[in-house]
Image (cartoon, rainbow, N blue to C red):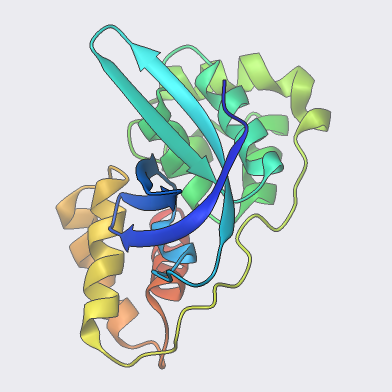
Length: 199
């Protein structure tokens, strides 16, 4: 129904952003909300997917059309819901995902939250023949977020990882390593965290 919205990001949380479009605030669930920053002066375009279920309707936001297309392919796999698809998209290593599908690498796919061996096998079965259609753009462009040394940036990143479905114990294990990183943004903490969790 919708292809994209253009507006101003007014709220950023670990699980979603709110995009103000002519005075209407749209709650968009995104893989990495911290690619955006609150700015009522800079208009952004976010591609959207509307999911309608029995008693629920939600909007999912994507940085570009390629990310949205990959999301749509993933949710068409039996056993993959929007939340699991977002967790997979949050990882910056999309070439790793493509290689895993092409190489029948079930172990790699089961590292994502909510993905068991059966679902991983289904992903391979359903998408292997379509692997050539999965483009590998740099979906995670640099954000304009201001560099900060504040620990709240790390706390926001850890909260975002849990919002994606990773268990608290898993997140706690990598928190120490993330604290050792040089000055960074929440977006960068989140990227490093996802890399550590999927090793």
